[in-house]
Image (cartoon, rainbow over all chains, first blue to last red; front, side, top):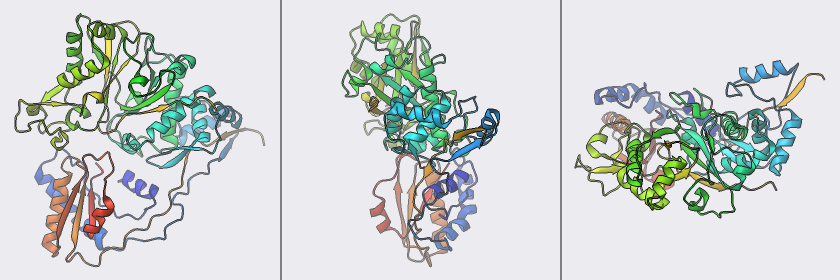
Length: 413
Length: 93
């Protein structure tokens, strides 16, 4: 209810009639659902026929802080504690956004401070260059990281990504950023050992800055604008880069239609990476069979929802070379996984995120032995190579209904 | 003034106030819209509400529009609004 009411305010309709239904709804019997409806009926009638307040259009609905609001504190410790107390952080120590640091960060973008880059839900607030820079300072970014962050926010604001739902859902998805291109090396983004892990300032601080923007600009505060049941460690920071040096295939950005000389960032509504550990297979087919098997666990969102979502398979270089040495192109891998990463209809029925109406027409829903894919088409299984030596790859399921979006990183103007 | 000055990391919502549609005087003869978001059991909940409303009021009927997912916006809402007198949408689970 808190999120629904807050959202009606954020969208300029603070008096929108809402009916409170006792939670949970999913997984309950028809008897319980009918009782829930019976209990809510009076609220629904009141909402349809009652005296909902009306107000003239046009006035700003939010009396939020002004863009350039400044706080002055007695000392650094008081400032740090105040930010934590006001839930303006991710809970970790951070760098105080002094005017001088913010100015330097803005300069790194080469843009005007008031330029609006994105409108970030569920607060539907403006992410300007300036307040992106403020959060980037807090995250520990260097000014030259700003173009990546700006391009990632532009991508996340694309309606196809569905940022409102990614932010507000009970699901543990985070905004994962994948950087492909020469800027990855130039900025010092790690793409070798521990590609998803800690230890590298560029990955850690760019990912963290995205999270802070989502929290401070978008209002994605756990328990408020972020209703995730568990959340995820991936919500602290989630920025990876392609290991282009080791990939046997065309770079990720080229597959997405960009020039080899471009640098891009792609956002996925990713769960944390699920390891695919195979130290035994020596052929493309057997290796990919293990990958497909990992992709078909029923409990992730893609397995039952199908139709719209993307998934990402991040191959370690060794697995990638085993597969490519068997003569398989990236498109071959996508096709193989699309055909093999499937679950039996009988296994999906009335379980997990079962939504048969979203399945492809060619899946015979009356046949429990028929196979249902986890995405709508082979191209929805995205392939990248990242990481260092070792017989590991990773599968990243997604929120299931958002599309990944790629944007070119525009160098500092 | 001594001390340390820092900038607010918050963003500003500039969405203007939106007027609500006038409430109905009566449900009699009204076609009720059911805008469903495909959350498990949500359609069953809405169907039951419509069933109960229809028992109490001589509504004209109902017209269901279902989104494939709660995570994406509904399309064609302007046309839908012309076909119904009121809309009940659910659920924010």
